Image (cartoon, rainbow, N blue to C red; front, side, top):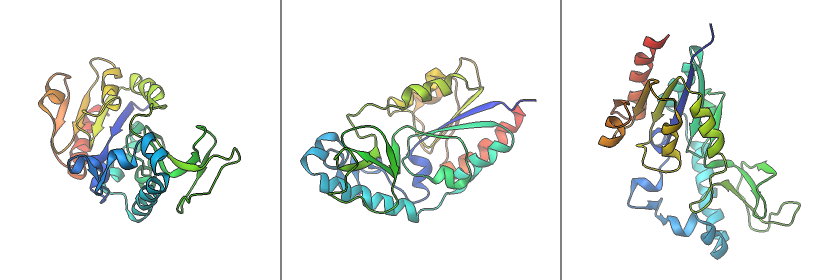
Length: 231
């Protein structure tokens, strides 16, 4: 018998428990920086050195971080379900936990590309330095979707969501668009779950979602138990 297709949308809350913070933790600041200064195309034009330094530190942070029980729990679901993870996170903790089907909506910290074009994309584990260029002469930049940039993977993610037989949200409160709109692509009437330590009333009431209001590590454990009912 074919495994049920389980689509999981994950956000910052799942990586936060591995020690990776985002700007939403503290009044629009990301590790002490204004988003406008380090995560927009305007910031790149104004001060590419600062942007590179900022993401070089993020890359080092991700290298040191380890997958937590929530990442591992979602990977374990592959034993019983056809799991597709759509993540807003730029880290590789899902992959390191063992998940085999991960779509990164907002890019990946261990990839870089020319500032002049979207592809090709290159692996990068060290720092990106000013003066490092691709074959087209363009300075290498992080392969990250900055604020004010389109989200190229959103259409593919919407298609994945539309094929879900169970839809789960972990570590995001469904307030960041366009990612938050993915829940609306999931077929009407299928089981839906949201795991987050603070769930807005509208998320759990208007969309017929089972709410598990816990941090990701605890919530995924409870989710695993609830999903046994669908085997």
